[in-house]
Every structure is written in structure tokens, then in C-alpha cells.
Image 1 (tube, rainbow, N blue to C red):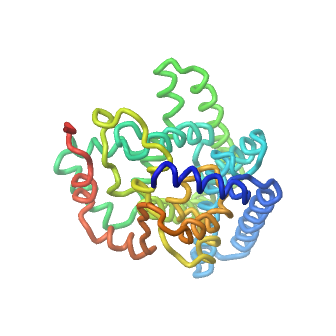
Image 2: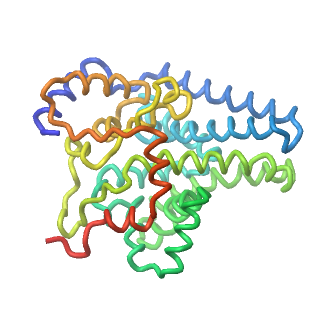
Image 3: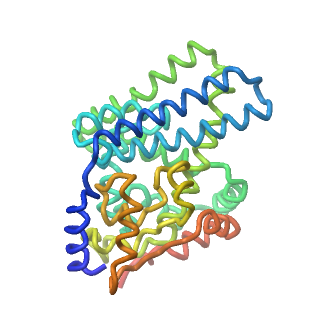
Length: 333
């Protein structure tokens, strides 16, 4: 998008209040999700393990875990509440449910928005460069995992990028970030340790493992559609971040029924809109999308794909080709 178009649109939607967090809406979002999760747990407690209803409820709870992640995501952008401390508290409380340490994720996600499209600078994408160095055996294992849909990539991202963030910051002598990261990580570990002590390891695994796997699979596939294949630069060629008004070119929106978009992911599918206006609350993204579509002569590189069709097509392709062929060359000229 042209800078002047972006500035004009940002001013218009700001006047409409689309970029401002509403505390009431934030509270309703959190309370509604807590109610959904508690209802699911109550029904699960009345259900026989491994019965058909047990699996249905586990899917319901897994989707709730993903929505808790979106709540954490909103908090990281200060888009759920207008007060920073409220976002920090709710983001931290949501973190054990989605096993994402809030402070670690927030700091890394800021870098993602800053450096998206510059693959070696984006901490959530830089690991892809190692594909060039991996052995043929590793590539074949990746292909096998890709075909089975087992969310190894999700767990690798969570633990390698976010859980190890405090240690990485400590090694870089960024002690303030390391300390905050360790506290954020402990906020996840302690609730799960207490739950294991209360339930016992067997019941904990029976209750938590399926919903965590459903959450991980949904997380992985929702994220695949957002940036896969859109890694055009290395920092040697592009030493400065891509500005917000150009991030329509390196993001992708997944089109789905608006009702499903709310029920399944709190509009997390509207990713171009989010990258253009990262402070916009989740419930304002459809309005921003409609506003962008209604603007005539708008020079926007809009990459909208159908969900889940796009992901199903990706899953039928060779993942090594998907990533290696779309990474920038070793030396940009």
C-alpha cells in the first residue's frame, strides 16, 4: 500500500474508533472464554474417558485453548484493554492454558511485526534458513511429519523460540529481559505442576493431552496460511524493517465465514488487516477489512485465500519445496 493511502486510511479508521481497545469488550471476551472452557471441563468430568462424547469435548476444549492464545495475542498488542497492567495480568493468566510464556512471546512477537518479511531478522521465521543445512534424512522426516499433520513444528516453535527465550537473553547479557522471561515461564510451569500433583500424571495426560494436540494442530494450520512463502528478503539486502504500510505484501488473510471466524479464532484469520493495523482489537478487524474493500482506487497487495482450502493444498505439496524455493537466495544482489 502506498504510504499516503495508508496514512489517510489510518486517520479515518482511528476517527471511527477502530484502533482503540474497549475495556468492556475485553472483559466480555475473557469472561465468555472462561465460561466456555469451564463448561467444557464440567462436561468432560461427567463423560467416560475415550467415549465419542469425550473426543467431541476435547476438540471443543482444544479450540478454546487456541482462543485463549488469541486473547494472549491481543494482550501483547495492548488491544484487549486500554491499561497496560490489565493486558499483562490477563496475558499472564492465559499463558498456562496455551503454554506460551507471555512476556517471552510479547517481546519476540514485537520483533516479528518489526522484521516480518526479512527472514533472518524475524525470530519466528529465521529457523527456516537452517533447512538449507539439514541432511536429506532430516528433510525426509520433515516430509513425513508434514503428511501426518502431527504438530511437531508447533512444539518446536513454542519451546525453541519462546521457552528458551530467557536463557537466550541471559546468554546475551540482557538480564532484565531474561528475568522477566523466567518469571513468565514459571507462571506456566507451576499451574501444570500443581495440576499433575492434584490429578496424578495419568489423569492429567488423559484430560490435557488431546486438547493440547487439537490446539497445536489448529494453531499450526492457522499460522501456516499467514506467511508461508512470503519471505522475500535477507537483512543483507534489506537492512531496515518493512514499514507497516507495505506489510500487505508479506502477509496473507484467510477467508472464512464471519461467524466461524469469531467462534473458531476471534478473527485471527484476518492477518493482512492485523499487520497493517496491529493495535486494532480483534472485533474491529472485520470492520477494517470492509473499510479497505470499500475504498476505491486503493493500491493494496491483497492476498486473500480460502480457508481451509489453502492449507489442504499446502499439505499435499512437498514442504521442503514450499519453504526452500520461497526463501531468498544466500546472497541478494
